[in-house]
Length: 111
Image (cartoon, rainbow, N blue to C red; front, side):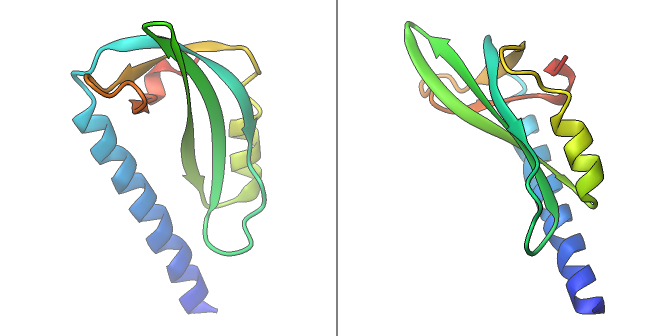
């Protein structure tokens, strides 16, 4: 049982660290508006719970789709987080210069 618990903690810390690296790398990228397409937090069969928010944005007339994932220790907290994102709500994302198919949603940009 303890091994399973530590697996969850390790996955959670990995996801948080990876997210932090992405935020740092994208801090100087240009911003554009994106729109929430869907949000959910399914129950994880193994590992930590992950809320997933799918969004869409347009750069130079071309539409792109991406998703934002946030890890949680409990399903309830992930579900509450995902329920905050209403389909159609707009927010800012940072878009990689030269490759607009890559974007990063920053937490302060979520309304």
